[in-house]
Length: 317
Length: 291
Image (cartoon, rainbow over all chains, first blue to last red):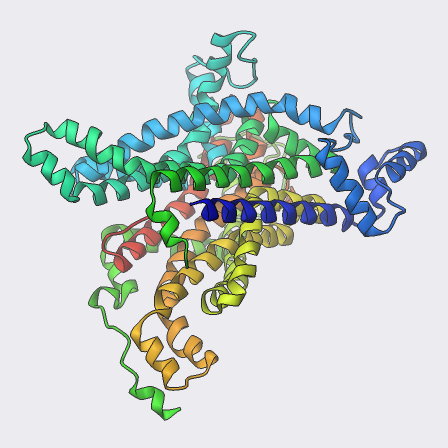
């Protein structure tokens, strides 16, 4: 067990380190002067000189990398060339909106996905299965930004019951904040609902034929209780892993969703940074994304191996 | 070399035979296949069948609804939406297919090496893991930022982001096949690595590869639309279904057709490929264990 955990930790560390190297050299591979890139195209000569000194851009590459690592370990990701603010604190202030959106859309996705998944597994060959499969197929195929536009068209233009865009922090006005999150969470949650549905269905089909489920049925436990308490509980492990592994997709989805609904979160920050060529900020958001992915991946693996010992054994290959 | 022919024949599982034909015999798979092929044809034929140039503006014909302004109406610059949608399908299909071929060209050798040579696996699996730590969109965004937005860069970005999927599928197939008797026999009879891979492993991994290609295409099409929507893909005024949608957003109140029709076109492509891909997967795996 210990050696498995250490190996996973080692892998995560290597992945993270390589990501840092890729980002470091990625920014330095930009056409033109790195100092100009990091200070912004309109940076004054003084600003460029400051960047040059700060990152030691006249030093040999390996010294630069050590300086970069040192700054990184102190949580210093540099300054935005657009606003001059610290990248770390700008990212930190954009995160709450995205986290709220991510959590809510995951809830939507799990609610729709798990119930459709159960429906499809239990009602095999009946209209229920067709319906659930249809929902999943729709979720996988619909471009989520288009779904966003359609929802705005329906619920904000034709039948104006919900706000079309904007964001209110949860702590300022919880009701308004949640109202503004309804449509974005549905948009971001749809694709996940489809993935979760398929996973739940596959896992349920497997557990429903297991011996312990047959035993539970034979004991006379009502069908509903067999499904929820016995089969579902044993299927959820797989489902939770899949949810964990979808973080990358979630971040990509958040970028577009925030753009459609004008939510000032991490995704919009990413887009704005790229469009305005704010490379210090790009470097920061990409690093935070990669680190987040690696950490969640590690956490999922560890939790999974704690719950299901078979994983540790299989890792041998 | 003649000795290898006496190795046990690969297992002939009736369910694994002719998956393509079996997928086409299911109603959903057939419908998916027909729509997918039609969309590809529409895209290819766009220059021939489009009623007008996709970039021709007509300021006396702006915001005409479908019917009055041609089959799909006109946009804010009076451009014919039908022509723009057709050319947009062309762009989506071209980028979708090209990027997936490119991903396969890079991902398949990676998966082969990783799955066949244990020594290579350690390195390649780490590379795959690093690639996966950068979500598809972030890779694409980064490339767009560095190289500038263009159709070529979108294709490259989408290709890179789909490489890990191909590498992992092929690696898994190699693991599955490597342990089988006919491979062991083949190796014991002195077959070279290239022969084992070329005549035994690769042909047997083709079905899995085919499924992966089919299910990756709709993702690539969605990716292109998304990047163009964000202004990081195909540059206006060149027609793309994604840019048509971002162009439509300000006019949601007055011109619904500008937002609804291009989206339907994207969905027709992705839905068709997903339907066919699902049928193909079901044909290959009766238990149909999806991701």
